[in-house]
Amino acid sequence: MEQDKRLFKQAIKLIKQYDRIIIHRHTHPDGDALGSQMGLAALIRDNFKGKEVYMVGDEATRFPFVEVTFDEIPDEYYQNALAIVLDCGSSHLICDERYKTAAKTLRFDHHIYCEKIADLDVVNSTYESACGLVTMFAKASKLRLSVRSATALYMGMVTDSGRFVFDSTTARTFTLAAFLLSQPIDLNSLYYNLYAEDFSKIIERADNMHKIRFTPHNVAYIYTAREELPENGEAAVVSSGLVSLMRDIKGVYAWVNFTEGDDGVHVELRSNRYNINPIAVKYGGGGHKKASGCVVPDRETAMRLLDDLDALAQ
Image (cartoon, rainbow, N blue to C red; front, side):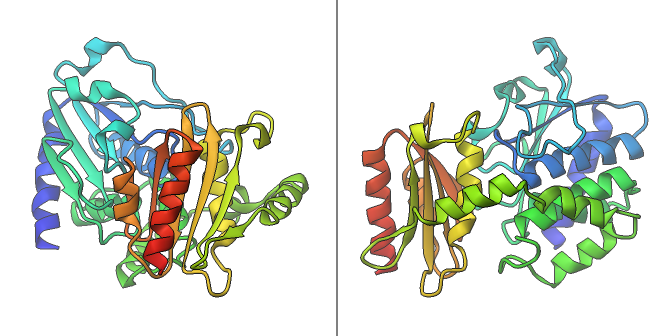
């Protein structure tokens, strides 16, 4: 915690130093990437008057209910600006490479440390989410919360902890959640928007459960070919949704979803027992010990990855 506090003070100094701040996160944003980006933007606007704050990146197609507009800014805006990167452990996954041209860079991240990305890296993999780390930054720095910042940060904590089920959840998680709930967050609306599904989607999920297969050592997996994708379905979104179908199968301690897309096969690896992160890193990805991902070029490579996961389970 002392190291976190020291880094938080340096982060505050950087934020105070620059009048223009541009906030990045990883591509295909999940709830944590989106929540930390929106939450930190609101924190800066609420506590540091007169700052120009921009959020950049691809659209948040997984969360159509979230009212957010990403900024299209010219290259010259990065001159004399601070670029902040959130929830990203690998530089090639950052949503806009122009962060490299900023005067200074800052990162808040909870993934396993793989590489130095920013001038100041605030990285702590013991947090269940990047939103949790940003919330601690706000709490330790005595920043004022608004309903908007608290709601966005709470969304990321909830989604990245699996509704506080994953073993990354700690006593600190609940302390920080309580801090955010000091604001009147509309929990009914938030949870409904996050988890309510059209009946057609429920039927589609049931159909996909019939596609689950098992390796010799009981690794569960689903493989979805490009032509099997639903109309207008994005591979990254489909893959992250399908992987959860295998989470609660008795006797399964590692599972993986493969979804073919235009840019390759999207892979989501999960486990409730093993450290699967080295396998994701081997194939160009990363993440956490028990939740990681990558994109591989073809089905043949995907099956080699599956063999590696099966060997780990053995």
